[in-house]
Image 1 (cartoon, rainbow, N blue to C red):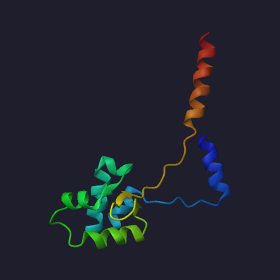
Image 2 (cartoon, helix red, strand yellow):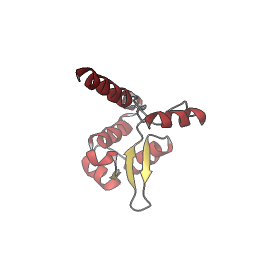
Image 3 (cartoon, rainbow, N blue to C red):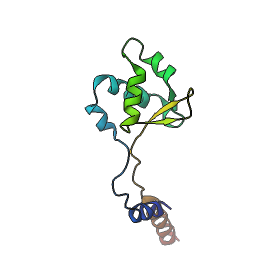
Image 4 (tube, rainbow, N blue to C red):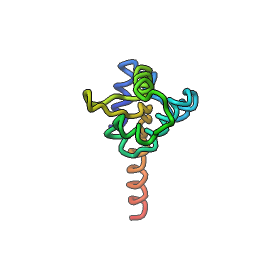
Length: 118
């Protein structure tokens, strides 16, 4: 099934993967980097996202204008905005990992070993 995604992506011309890598965050200005690192550290942020209030409570007295920082990060594709106002949630726009074909090879290797042992 993982090969299906790769084939469709190649046919659609999606050679350039979207999203960012954790290394890209080092190039951000300090305020934006703090927000991104806070989102990365929050376990619920990977699926559901984090509200501005939660971010604000974690970054108290460290940032001047959290609203402007979040708008800028969203505009530039660093974060994904989920939900509708006033219940917006933010999540890091990480680049998807490429599909692995190891799962298919693993089953064939295991079945070959079982066949040899019998």
